[in-house]
Amino acid sequence: MKTVRIIAASLALLLALSACTQVKDCLRRAAGRPTSADIAVKKARIDMEEAAHQARLDSLRAYRKAVADSLELLDRIKASRTMMMTAGSVRGLIRKGLQYRYYVVIGTFGSPANAKAQAARASAAGHASAIIPFNNGFSAVGIDGSDTLAAIWESLQQARTESFCPKDVWILVNE
Image 1 (spheres, one colour):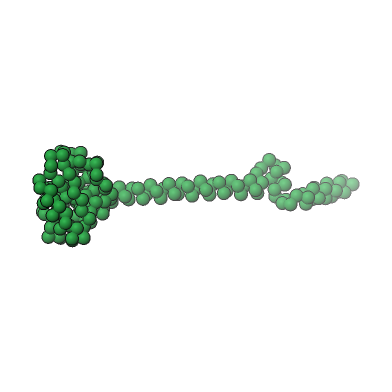
Image 2 (cartoon, one colour; image 1 turned 120 degrees about the vertical axis):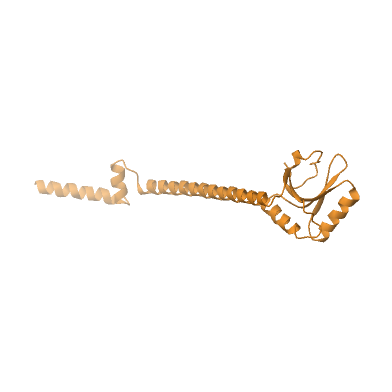
């Protein structure tokens, strides 16, 4: 009789479990544990969080590399004895029309005609030129304006090979 009861109870349990589509989920639910669907949602959330974390780490690595590259470039500029001056430190410089953050300055002139002639020589050699005015009537000629230090360094190196470029060329930082 005892055996019949055990078989009947086992059969009833199997029938109840077979009514569930997933036996594991029924057992998990009965034990108060998460189901397969709950686990899949949690895994997807964890994967998204890990991907976001990895993207932040990649961004941080790229930023650190950019900082290291900039410091290396600044060291090269310093070693070349090229002067860098901020627009705020140059007395009388009118920053209003400056479009870019950096310019290679190839001369400062008291005569507007001389400034225009120097700008024309630079333009003829393939460099974009800009006349940068001062409030005392002087004008500087800047070439190859750029928003990146790396690009202005390349422009400076190229300009130094040109006949119009003086030895005392310098970099203007529009800050």
